[in-house]
Image (cartoon, rainbow, N blue to C red; front, side, top):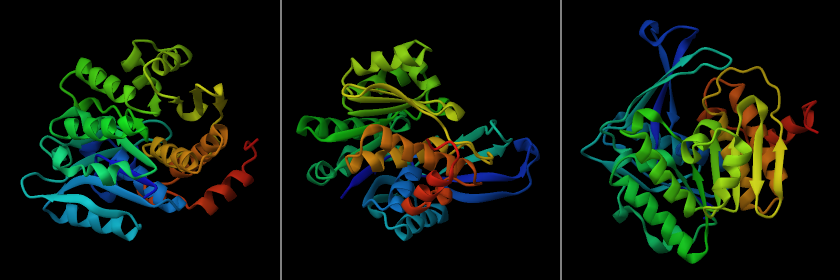
Length: 315
C-alpha cells in the first residue's frame, strides 16, 4: 500500500445558494467530506494505492461514504461500521471568494470511535506513508489510536504525515488541542498547517519563526499553507522556499488545503524534490478551489499536469 490515511470521514452538505446565511438556506448538496477522507480520494485519483482507517455510522450516510470510497479504488477494509454512533455531518455556507463557515455535528460521532484495536501494527507499518489529522486527537479513543499508529511507525523509521486540521468546534480546550498536536508533530516527518494552526502550536504568528520552531520538535519538513499566497516550506535538507498559488476563479476554498495535501503527499511518495511536490500540491488545491465540491473536485494526475502547464503563473 502506498498510503494509509487515518481519521475523519463525514457527510458534507454544501449550501446550493451562494451568499446566503445557513438559517436561510433551503437546499444542500451532499458530498463525502472530512479532511482525511478528502486527502484519501485526492491521492487515489492521482494514482496512489490508498487505504483508509476510520468509522462511519450504521446509517444511510455511512453506507454512502463506504461505497463512494470503494468506487474511488480506496481499500475500505479498515473503515468500520459503528453500531452505536452516527456518521458525522458538516453544513457549509457559500460566500465566495473567502468566507465558507462550517457547522459540524460531531458530538457524538462514529469517526471519533476508532480505537487502538483498529490499528493492525504490521499492516500500518508496511505502507509508504501514514497520513493522520489533528481532529482525530480531539476525543478518545481516536486520540490514543492516532498517537499509537504514529508512534509505531516512528519507532520503525517509517514516514508519517500530520495535518494539523484544527477545527475549534471539535475541541473543549485550545490548550488541549495544542498539547496533543505537539505530540503528533514530534512523531511525524512532514507537518502541514495553516497560519492559524502554526500560531496555535507555537504561540507565534510569524510563519518563518513558527516553522523553524516546529522543525526543532522532530519533523524534517514543515509546510505553512497560506491560501492565495501559496505555501511556505521549511526543510532540514532544502532550507526555506515559497511556492506561489495559481490564480483561479474561486468557487469554494474549503477543500483547497486537502487538495494541496493530496498532491504534495503524492510527490513525497514518489520521492520528488520538495519544490516539485509542492507545485503539484498547489495545482491540485487550485483546481479544487475552482469547483463546488471538495472530494469530487479532486483531479487526476494528467488533469493536474495539464492545468499546471496551461497556467500563466506556473513558472
